[in-house]
Length: 264
Image (cartoon, rainbow, N blue to C red; front, side, top):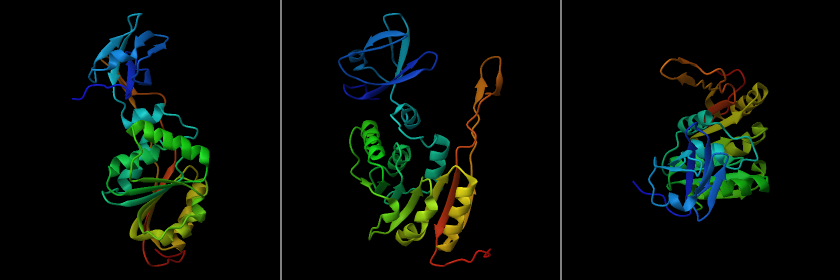
């Protein structure tokens, strides 16, 4: 088990569960629980703890991807982990795939895809808003400690994007994804998967219509609901609030055929 080093990130976790993502450097960290010297984290292992000058205890962990996503800078709404995991699984990400995504937002899906691909394959991220692209790039660098060599971030409008390469997977997280189904169908290889995430029923109906018109089959749409439970020595009950509807996920496979509206 590797110990913490200078300049890496540590998730300081209080005994009641509150978390802070802090860089290990030669400076103090302070909050309402007290002050610790971050240089004392160096040499510690995950699960070790430090006490503040007030006697409060911080446990030391490296952030999981889920924890990092909820603590990173995000100017946009992130894709929730329940949807991220489904997108990666139903997208059937495999080593060596060439994957295209748009838009990048704060980089949550990008991080999940890069983790799944490791350094094999290629991820192309297309984002038309420079501010979002720069923030996502910073979040990605902060998580990995470097810019992954297989990640290519382009500031462009996906509707105007073209490439001579054939891609294996396409992920769309856009306000009006139906506008780019046609252009995307020309660069997605036969048998490749297209996945789209949209919050509203009207959006997924328009996406379905365009998918049918551009040779996609096995089109299915679903949503995921997540409910946590409160478990202790005396109770076992669902928590009152849950992560319910966040978006509809549509998955489709590319074929060389076109389908009429009444095709089964």
